[in-house]
Image 1 (cartoon, rainbow, N blue to C red):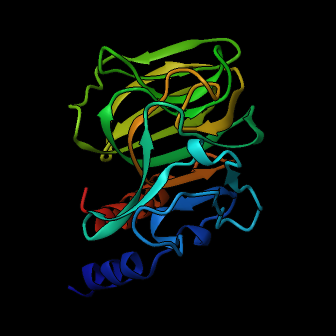
Image 2 (image 1 turned 45 degrees about the horizontal axis):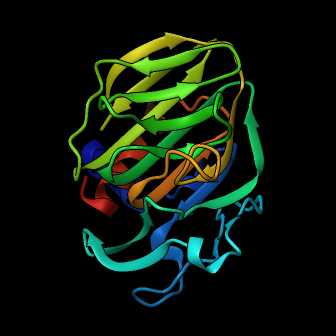
Length: 224
C-alpha cells in the first residue's frame, strides 16, 4: 500500500528541471506582473536563456490574473500580439507539452509559413509542419474556449500527439521543426486569440514514466 503514496509524493514534488534535456520552459505564473500589464519578456526557466520577447508596445500580449485554476495566463489578442526568439530548431527527437486556451483557433508555436510546431487550425485539428512533412493529426479535435493539455513526442522518425495523456495519432516524420514565434505562424500571420499558461519542451524523447510526471504536474497546476 505504500507505493501509491510514494508515487504521489514524487508527483507532488516534481518540477520539469528534474528530467534531463529541458530546452524551453515558460510558465505564466512565474511572471512578476500585475493584471493587465503588457509582457515584454517571457523568461525561460530552463536555464538556457531562451527568453521570448516583444519590443513593440502594441504587440505585447497581456498578463491576466485568475484565468485558470486560480493562476494567471498570457493573453494574445489575435490582432498583432506575438513574442519571439531566435529560431530554435529541433532536427532530432523532442518532447513538447502545451497548456493553453483557444478562444479562436490558430498558431501557438510558429516559425515560418512552411515550418511550425503547433497549430490548431480552422477545422479543429492539431497540426505541425516540418522540412519534409505537413502533419494534420486528424482524430484530435478541440472546442473553442476549452483548455487544452496537448503533448507531442518525436522518437525514431515518428511524432505522436496526446490529448491529456491519451494518444490520438502518430505520423512518420524525419524533418526538422522550428520555433521562433509564440502566438503566430511567422510573426504577422495566423495570430492566436487565446491564453497560454505553460510550455515545456525537451530536446529529447522523454520516457513514458517521465511523460506521466510532466502531465500530472501540469494537470495539478492548471486543473486540465
